[in-house]
Image (cartoon, helix red, strand yellow):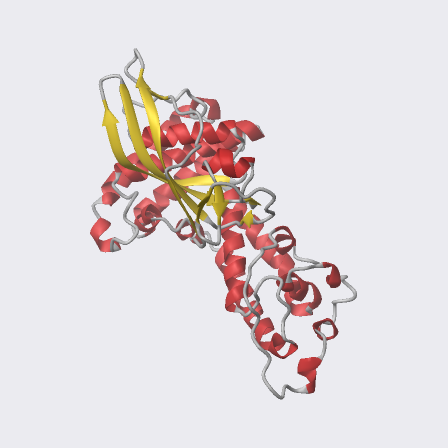
Length: 374
């Protein structure tokens, strides 16, 4: 049976396959279909992706497919953001395939089949064990804040408890409200990281960020108290009209979230970071220039309504930068890309003292970059 996860998350990777050695043995010249016992029985020829064909036609790999799917589902059942976890799994599949010698749709040389099969078996078995370990959830986020949290047992326990309680609340909501709650909670984590000075510390040694621990603990405990006060009613925690007390990165984060929500971007992109670059403010008006990093959760055309409305521009993924137009192009921005834009956002101060974003679209952007990888 074809593995569910691999069937859903087919990737497009471009590279050259390993060259076949001179004087290869006769077996190395046999078609791969003849070397996979289940190939004909499972109709594997209908699969385009080489890794999918191997998992379909090889008995041992085929048996691992359902186990991998079950392990992925087990993890998805205990975490908050399923889409981000699915995207992380896509990235892992791409990394596993390339490290084992599989490059997208490029055909394999039969002589390399044995070593590739062994590599896939080992990597997939290790992945299953990792996914079934609840401690994996802590490190999977791969952010500076998550590294600090996972390095402190008490913080890790508190963060895990908070996530579990929020999951219970979010699952009581209908789809649209649940998506809004997820976006709201994700925005809270980014605000938490900014308040604890962890939003731009990618290359700072972990030992130099120990002072962030108390800050993280205070904010996590505060959020736990808010969850407890909700008494199981998600409407008491989520969906409130959020205001910005000052024109800053938090205000830009909220503004971007509203723009993307209005354009139904949540299934394709997730804001991962907002960094304030500059601010020009008067008593009633402000212009905040910020860098907004987004992670691709599902493929979309490089020049489409999703690209334009949700990222502010079309893209040239080969040049890794924005492109004015790409009419008629069928190329996609793939899962795992990080898209960063720089843009100025306008704010106005209301009579109540809060700042409201008057920027209603992400177009145009001042700068952009597309980066492949986690």
